[in-house]
Image (cartoon, rainbow, N blue to C red; front, side, top):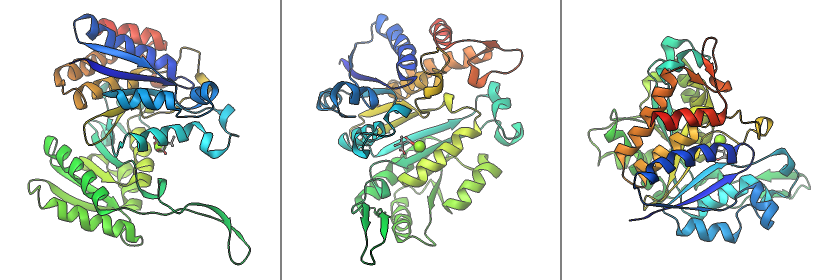
Length: 356
Ligand code: IPM
Ligand code: MG
């Protein structure tokens, strides 16, 4: 079977980090893995070319692909565009279009980087959390939404926090499934003391739990979860939560590890088709300077091999190559420490390819 991969470099540092990730895939291809790559624009890059952040050209390619590899989208030059044309809308558009409801964001601390975290090494050493974020519902997509003048003649903005039972059930199943393959502990994060949407979420998660008796399920309010992630992050194995809470908690969790430049993510639909992208943004301040850390993107490639193509061996091989490069002391600027070997984005790519 040919692995049909859509490649969306995007904006800012996107093209630089994608280039290094493709070098890694090329190694596998040259060894005989059957893959094809099709490039398409997304975000600001797509707006420049087609006048839309997720144009039809890109939709066709992504719908036909087995997996999508994305760099990053966004940049200051697009901040004044009409909301529907902004790069971020391209990202939300592709998530919704492909039905990518399950967003997996691992926060793993590599022992070599224990000092890169702003938390004490003993608090974060050995950290390995998986955040499962629902990605196509909640206040991100709920209707009605907008800005208006109300009956009293005052302007107001409004969004709708809403989850259907089927949406909660399917993300709960993904989270329990992942917990079964890991430490069998799942924490569902809600704000059930205030918000009915999440009270409902909790009720459904408890019901789905009956099918996974081996998994120890707990519940936590989102404010407490934000605190516990800083106080004692190692209490968590898998966390599952809605779109907006997951957005916030996954950024918080990523920083426990020292650099968001290390964290991969996968967004999956029901057929295992996935969009794979680093958890970080387009970093316009360092774009084009060959300074970015390509590791998160390379690790996203590993997730692609694992989740869409069921090739655990290839995924582990890439992850081990990264560990080897870190152990040998190679660091991009974001994870640099005194005494280490500072390398550029492309030099980090050289080292990863060599380690493979
Ligand atoms: C993320 C980002 C996006 C989100 C933005 C860019 C729309 O913050 O992937 O976490 O809010 O989902
Ligand atoms: Mg975010």
